[in-house]
Amino acid sequence: MNNQFSSKFKNEWHPNIWPPFTQIKNNRPQIEVSHGKDALIYTKNPKRELIDAISSWWVTLHGHSNEYIALSIAQQAKRLEQIIFADFLHPQAKDLSERITSITRLDRVFFSDNGSTAVEVALKIAYQWWQNQGKERYQIIAFDGAYHGDTFGAMALGERNIFNASFDRLMFPVKRAPWPSTWIDDDQVEQKEEIAINKLVDLLQTPTAAVIVEPILQGAGGMNMVRPEFINKVSEVVRKNNSLLIADEVLTGFGRCGSLFAFQKAKIQPDIVALSKGLTGGFLPMGLTLSKEEIFQSFISDNPEKTFWHGHSFTANPLGCAAANASLDLLEKEPSKYLSFEEKHLSLINILQKSSHINKFRVCGTISAFDLQVGEGSGYMNNIGKKIKSNAIEKGLFIRPLGNVIYLMPPLCITDNQLLKSYEIIKEIIEDS
Ligand SMILES: *Cc1c(COP(=O)(O)O)cnc(C)c1O
Image (cartoon, rainbow, N blue to C red; front, side, top):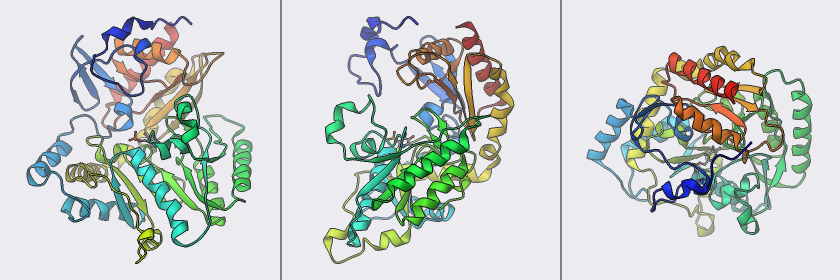
């Protein structure tokens, strides 16, 4: 198709802003927003109401400007806004640590600032753990299509592609196992899983420090889902090898996949878990890395080399902790909101299933996704997604396709009507294009 997004947009972008993940030469400028409420974003010029069907990059869990979380942050801000966490403890961090370890059945919480840092910390803990015990295990295994963040360590763990090609020489080696993506009515799933497990078992012949996985759902990689059974098998073979299993639940945590954590749906117990995104309900940036007590214990020593020398200025920021505690309150108050979300998607995807241009329907908890058949050039760089995004905005829906993959990941508060409208708008656009 013609690329209708020419370089004419270049001069419409703000002259002082360097936007994330964007080539301004061929993308429309940012839309100015006046406010957000629940599942809606209100834009200024032109004045529009948009359904935020991707939870503002997967973070907005209960909806925009949620009163309860906002109040909790405001109250905390008047009491204590920030404190150096190496020397001081505060009630919000204490509460959050106790709550999150009790839900995940892990024991120790390390606080950082976002998903990438939560993953960096997870990897550094796992890697150093072996050295603290005087054991030689250096291999790291991840999966094809993985995304773990944009800082160097997290980037090295992710799939190597156009987004990180410039830094290839600076990234450490990572071994990869296949990711057996599946969808509704996929009759090859068992074969694909077997191939993946065999490859993983093969790789594990080399002493391995850690295997990192996004349980059940690879988000940035294209909303690619696997069966919980597969994650369970991964855990089993990693256990057999005595290597550490890191679950990157930065996206999947806090009900996104229909259970509070995706690893619970897969019935596994990881050694280390990374959390962020929905952690604070999407209000404030914060990351958590949880680990087993046994791992923490190996860092206690008179030998300074065994210390975990890592920390960030805003570690366990009280406002972030207050937001996270408030978000947990909301999840605990109404678990049915995430437990039953999948049914909503399943009852609506038939609106799209009749279209001949789309396939590979998949649903997991609050997320539904499908592929647009574009012939040549599928993948992230395909322009069709950009065109669909722009048409959707005209009709009152904000989505952000990953190349030819269209997905919905709305906040839990989206109304049945808004969700129905989202599906109908997508149907209209696909049929018209
Ligand atoms: C978004 C994401 C990250 C990175 O989180 P940031 O807060 O953007 O740094 C890491 N892992 C997964 C699975 C993610 O989806």
